[in-house]
Image 1 (cartoon, rainbow, N blue to C red):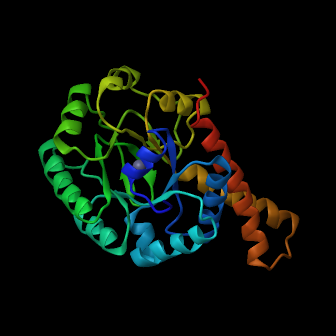
Image 2 (image 1 turned 135 degrees about the horizontal axis):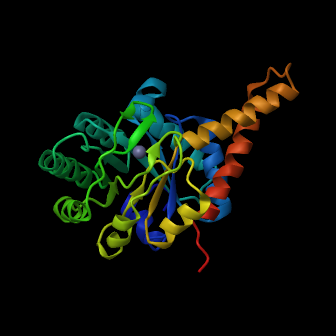
Length: 281
Ligand SMILES: [Zn+2]
């Protein structure tokens, strides 16, 4: 199957938890690291970037081409080319035009009604292109790329339930207390709402997985959440691998050796993530 939309990944992997790796706008080392880890795990994944990262690196079409190029080296791996947190409908349109199979429209900054209305618009466009849509309700605080929110606004169970049935998007990301970027202090998750959600007929996405305890990830996977977003933690690992290599080999001028040091550390970390998301009953 290889290139998939979210519904195809859900069907193919029996609604099991899959990671969404932020690949920095289509960075080849991040992509190689992700494909290597997915190949080892035998699972699919989402390859994700925000509109600003895509635009400032390779552009929408370049992003798709970079993923397809690396995917050719790993023909057994299923992946979704995913757009993260598009707060504007025009980027959803642009991404679909370029061949993204999975897009997120984030109308969480709008009123409930406006969010539902725009989400429905984005959903119709995605369907027409054979792609799927992720939407967001409530605000996830913290900072990552252009996504920056000060306070958090956590939706109630009733709001989540209404949003899921009114939008009918394939994936829903409700804010439940996780944070984009690094946590300041201990995460305070809204477990009461998470518990109530187990009977809802939706596919839920956990944003801001950086800094969460592996047991928490496993717990969400066990409760049937389907997509887990990682960005900041991946950047930390890649950078650390690179820095350690250059400290040991300060005269190394070859990008394919020092970048590979970052890649290799990142790929091991991604393999660990696949492990955390695979709860053994
Ligand atoms: Zn997010």
